[in-house]
Length: 416
Image 1 (tube, rainbow, N blue to C red):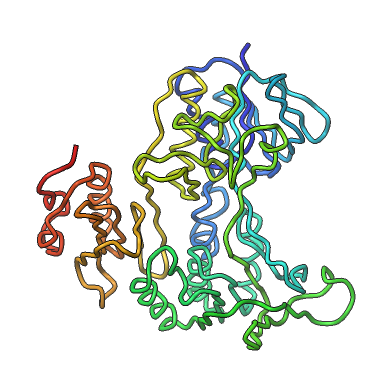
Image 2: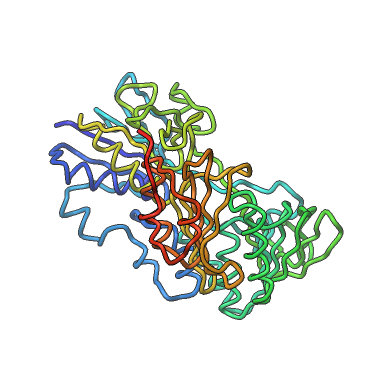
């Protein structure tokens, strides 16, 4: 019986396992992960799970019987020590081995550490797992003052959730504005103002020098009480969440002799440098025809889900190139923010809607071609724009600026 092993039970790995069965694979499917939980979705971690509007079971990718009903073996809490592609063998941390005809690496990414004094104090967290979310929620329910280090989307979502629970929140961002690197100056400034108006203290252009705790002894025995910035500000905090990005878990691939470079390098069919090993999700760096340029590594829900599906099909000899317009969303307070494509600072921006009312879409044109859209409270615009971006459409700027015109009807002609 053929055996396909999936290393990593996140969204990409879970979807790949389900797809193997959906596509008729009758061999053995083994899903291995060091975490103790079956596959779950991460977007609720910073929002619904912190707010308590969802429970951990609600975040599961499939109902519990799914794996039994589809004869998918879950090896949870099991690390993988070594992959031997040439011998078609996966070696687990406990010394067991699995003979594998094909392997999918869906090992994801992990939070980037902040190497400053006090980083090991109790109460200094990252937000990456279900267990992280439950720990942080418990502290917030006790009324903890929260300091968020890093103004990316996870940090901004967590800040919004904590304010909804009534906690004092301070956000520390090294850049000029939170979320600026992705959204650009104008939209980032509007969102920062929105956070401030809702009580978040936002401190920018400074890093963290150290965390300070109470009492003496080992850092793990002391609780964080203060954040000291590189600018000398002292921020009282009962809990700190560091969200300064992630790094790909590509060490297993590297040790196995696969080509890596800020992620596992794959081709358009999710195949690595070994023909029987594939990679998908946060850990994979792939060529994306929608973006052009060098291979990219995306950390979006859409990429993890759909690339996992594509990789599973490739493992079954049903390969089709994976290449989609990148898309992601974020919920902060009552705002729904969506983005598709990949804007550049030099793009021409066409605005639709009411930016001052935080209900707008910014459309990005490059040499007349629609290449990206960022929408706040206008998801239909972004969905329509995503299709036009995939078609390399050239919308009429005047029509595009008219919010009463459906985005689908703004394209005058398309490039071949």
